[in-house]
Image 1 (cartoon, one colour):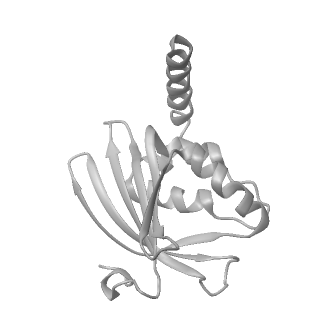
Image 2 (cartoon, helix red, strand yellow; image 1 turned 120 degrees about the horizontal axis):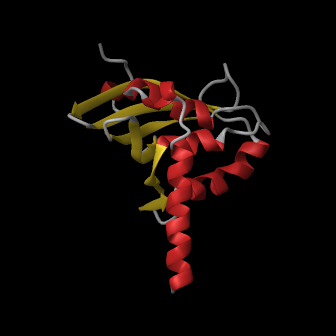
Length: 172
């Protein structure tokens, strides 16, 4: 048990050290951190993603959560660490190009917290027709020094659950 506790402390320290290496422009604003999120996961098939950059955007206890349909017609929620996400998508990105971009955004901010609904489109190559759309719900916190992603929850559009029009057009 002591070894497990020591490993947890070590991991937290390492994650914190990695997070401190964030590019200042990535974490100085809500716009910067959202742009960095999309940039880190996008690339051609086989292109190595900058996983350290992705890690640097998230609080050490931050989570990535996908809410998606299951075979029985219901919904599953999968909660992942950033490391879980990297392990999950690494083989997919090695085989297929993946470019995710923001189509529209709504959001609210109070003090040092922000909640963003970022409508996305995904393509296998720049310029391709999107093969998927959905919404990223992004919860951000600011510790007085920088912005952090606390959680990123997403759900893709389906035939039974199309995106509402108000989430597909940029708001002024």
